Length: 151
Length: 195
Image (tube, rainbow over all chains, first blue to last red; front, side, top):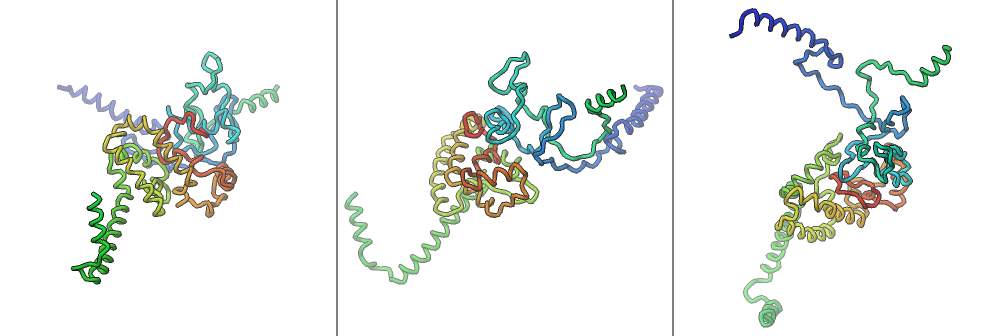
């Protein structure tokens, strides 16, 4: 049996959670948590084949083409059919970095290291969508230029 | 045995004793239409997707994989069915392929690929056979829809344009050389040319 006071406390807690939930995620827009907002339109992947700038030195380069249906599994790696060391001459695609042929102790291997095998873990195709949240990222070169100018 | 053949020949080489010429010619003509029509109808029946995926080997493996690809669902709703790619459209070659397919009936009866594991085990062999067939006929079944003459390079991505205007245009390459695994998943590709 639930006492009236407990019930009241529970009800209060529940309504306050509801009130909070409505503002908890800006990406959802103005939709209450119990409602499903309409799905945004699926964007077309950029397929220009023009290499993009890296935003910071260690950024994995983004993929400038479609990768729909690319099979990357135990049997084969579709990405490497162009980007592997032996295929770049025919494909003229950039070769995967030598770091991908190293194990985590820095030893060089003959093949792409298993931990680097699944390309889209780090490299992703892009579409020209609007960012969901504001991005205040600053390029390191811009910071260096600004600070050296200030000095 | 020899006597039987001889007796049959004697019967065939003599004029008919009971049936009129009209019956034999018109009757033969109608029977011919029925036979030929029936043959082609049956042939076309084996050339449909429901027939192909009547076997669980095809329905659960290759058909399921096809469903995720652009040859099954795409923006314009034009799709390829199994025979569009795997059976030659021209009659003579179609019959030749159908005769070869009797081996597949054998495989069905003896359960050569009746489990997923057996199928995966055999996949490289099966795929290699299709690749060889496409290579030999210059990817004819691709070209039944994708005609090089009407390709607009300006509508293609830079990479596609580059490949199609060089290797494909001068005939040193054919569709299947690059477009392996577009409608089904690939087997282990170690040692396959270009992979």
